[in-house]
Image (tube, rainbow, N blue to C red):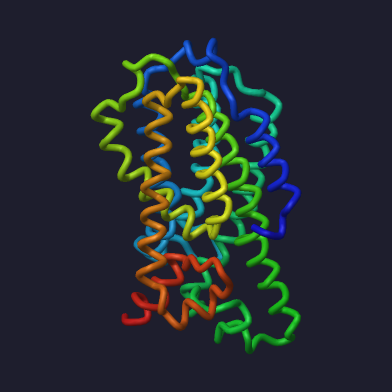
Amino acid sequence: MLGFPLLHLCFAHCLLRHGSVSADEAARTAPFHLDLWFYFTLQNWVLDFGRPIAMLVFPLEWFPLNKPSVGDYFHMAYNVITPFLLLKLIERSPRTLPRSITYVSIIIFIMGASIHLVGDSVNHRLLFSGYQHHLSVRENPIIKNLKPETLIDSFELLYYYDEYLGHCMWYIPFFLILFMYFSGCFTACKAERWMPGPALLLVAPSGLYYWYLVTEGQIFILFIFTFFAMLALVLHQKRKRLFLDSNGLFLFSSFTLTLLLVALWVAWLWNDPVLRKKYPGVIYVPEPWAFYTLHVSSRH
């Protein structure tokens, strides 16, 4: 993520420019969007978190290695349904949000998710050939003995498209859209400052999914930047006697739970020597799939 400073600067500019809300906009509060948040959480769990699991569960004979897996079809559905739900979420915002930034973000989101689809498809299919996610590309036994050695560069290029370029173009617009929507979730009406019961039930699965997104997508810097921007906006609006409505509370609570889960995840694996080697540096956030190939699949 650190290799794309221009995208981060654009993201920061949009946060600062569209982070405040006027009293007139705060008067137009919206009810809790139970249908959208439920569909959003459900499709995230099924189509994103569930796609690698489905790929391992369905018989290999149904989806040969030279054809798309069932997880790839899940990913294709995700690339269509998610931008549609994001657009519907933006439409329901009490605040009028900039259309140009929204449309460009959706376009970049779809492009990044599509790039990730191809790279992730090949990388997950390599699992059936013995590829180990807890090792780097060049350290994998099935990769380092390839001849000619230039083939290894091609696999590293594939990994770059999957883990870096695809993730940046996918997640930066995703979090930008969520923040722009969040910037309109403020109200001066005390009756709107509570989450209904169904919203409380959705916080746990929503926060748990974002934990998976942050750890597997290796986007902790982007996530923590967005979270603190949301926190700063909440404190800033509180001075104007504006408070989060039910939708804003749901989103902020989900992100708070995500931060707690990431902290617990890192603390649990803090002294793992193998994962420490793959994820060097100050920010140490291991991927769940790297943990799976190291500590779960290797036992079978």
